[in-house]
Image (cartoon, rainbow, N blue to C red; front, side, top):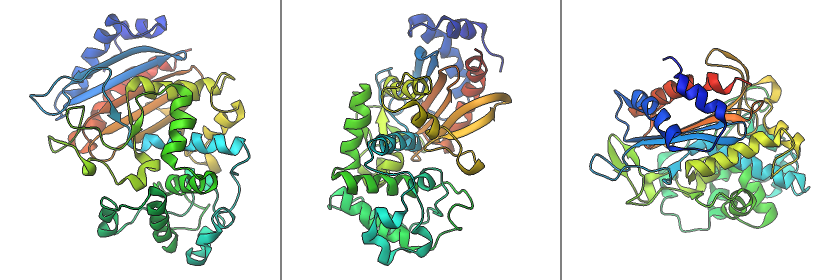
Length: 364
């Protein structure tokens, strides 16, 4: 579709979200959702390091429920990985962890049951999907975590014992294969070193540090914006993956708070970040080993037919969908979320929004 001139003008203004900007994005959301069974979507546009436009459309939990608002929470799935990587980076900067320490040194207690191929993998391998992991898991083993009453650190230890006892899917460091296990393993290493849960560390090191007051973990509550499966809203414990896996994809928050994280990631490259040194932000945003995988980010030199430098990621637990595209050179980006998974067309609707907005963001 053609880019609306009103949207281009809006982005150039670089002002805060207004009723005018809300109305500008509404036709785009309407067009994107048409023909798909998507209860609700949200879009937020960042321009030159500030929120320039934001809009939502649809309902929270089925046809007769309340409409979504800009204060609703959205589950962002694997877009959580960039936050976990940033948490680990803060600990590395304090010399509490090392990017290059081999796993056998970081977790010596697991060496006896660990496949030898994993002993030399590093935090960089874990976040750039070069650690040899493949996410195969027995369904009974997975589902047992929903009723597991042990502390989450003990649950994560049990999960990782299983994962590290499985042979690598390929020789670590030689290929890339997307996996949730790397982020979980990195989070466990941090828990072991600091003596606090990943959840506690995230609240202090990321959420509180950036003023992300809405951010939390796991499924949203009944009566709020809910994820959907085959048109039916889902709530309760099984409305998300087990909490043991949260470091790889368990954050939910408002679009504004997600934008706070995204803006800091981009400002950090220009010496104005709140969380990390400039060189660390740039390290997170660099593809490792000649691949498109940075640390918690996809790093692309081309997107939607445009040349440039783009940071991207998508996330879904099956009941939600979220995608982020950042253009760090212009400190601009678009954040998109839906309260249904890709099976209902959320990914296709997101494509429409992305292709309408990203060309404007890439302009100086």
